[in-house]
Length: 271
Image (cartoon, rainbow, N blue to C red):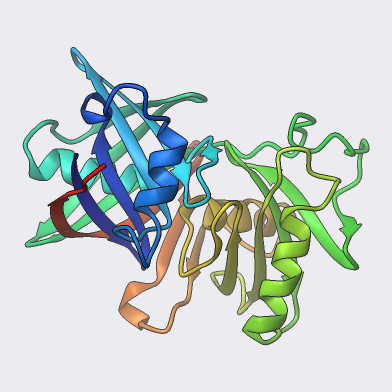
């Protein structure tokens, strides 16, 4: 099975043509095997895509084999592969299970592709993800932590901190929140410390993956919550160890994230 590996801010995905999947193989099982960092290729998730005429459909599977509704970095990886292979031109419309999302090429430099990815409108009232919601209430508590629930196509619990605790503490809290009984479909968790109205730092704990270096839907969820709390305006930069690689988010009739994606390699995975 031919695959392409991409990395967006360190959040890596395997991109696979869904037509190449052997008959009888479950997508989740293949994702779990190929994402294994010791016995597989190693990645945070898999993007399966299908071309039907001009339509481009995709599905996301996390490292644990579970399906995800959406992934900004997964969409960026798919778009980078399709553009590099000349299978699609910018702007692309990618069809997900929750509707179409637009991806536009900003710049290409060798293996690097800079993209503008549409995440969409946040939803603070999704009772499918958050059945505990109460009218007029913004924050809730679980596992001893106050969080803000929001859907950006997939579920997120955003925890606002004065200062980010050590990573080991955040990983333990993230694991507790991800699988807490409050969330029937589990939840992605972001811990955020604001550096002002235009910048912040974020620790990501993704559902079905664990700690990750980045998440574009997680960044979008942070942006949505900070805007709701009037702690951010129309733009936000998530600071990272590499200053040139900050994650830029903006509002333009919905949330858009600018993603720098690297095409890592092409290979063949034996099933």
